[in-house]
Length: 172
Image 1: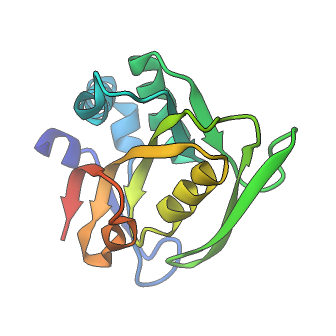
Image 2: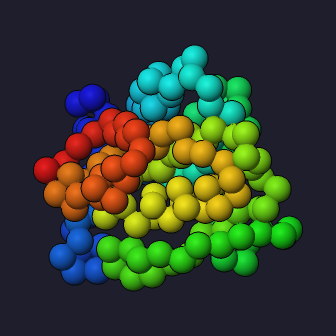
């Protein structure tokens, strides 16, 4: 995993003072590293009864759609408010530096769906927790969550103790 860790750069004081942003754009720029990240995200879930992959706007779209493609599954986007053109449901939540909302088309999932939720980063767990609630609001179940980076010191995993979590890189 050091190969992937070397592709994550720290940006101090972004988006506000005191935050050290984990920038994944160097990883995205390197096709071999991106391929490795997608394979490592996908591997634990091959052969499981997963019916869809969901990802949160925006960086979750990148990895979620690639994992969905790799697993030959549909990709379900969880969007920012006002971006979906059809009937949708929403959930609001707190971020480590503000508040936000996510939406999903009401016909995106059914009660029989088992969803793998993908995002680039697990920090405080607010976005992931809201995403799980949004998927479950439609009656689907969460099979697991997978992240490129987990900021262990923020203990976001604690909010998600009901779910299986797979993170490639951990930062203390």
